[in-house]
Amino acid sequence: MVGLIARYIDYQHRAKAMGLIGSGTSYGIFINGLVLPWLLPDYGWRSVWFVLGV
View (cartoon, one colour):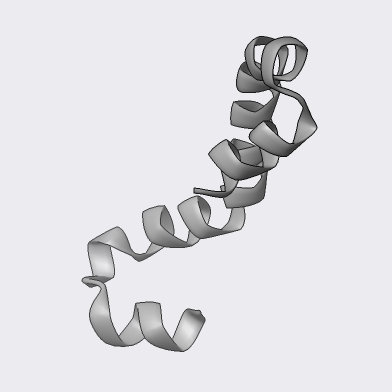
């Protein structure tokens, strides 16, 4: 990722891009936590996997 960022991202935006990439998993876990209570009771665990996977 560092090689791609160094090649394609302007110097002044590289730290923002690295921060976004590095914290992407945390954003995903946060979104899962928000969506899970609404989907799971009515549609089951398979719907959670499908919706969040898409």
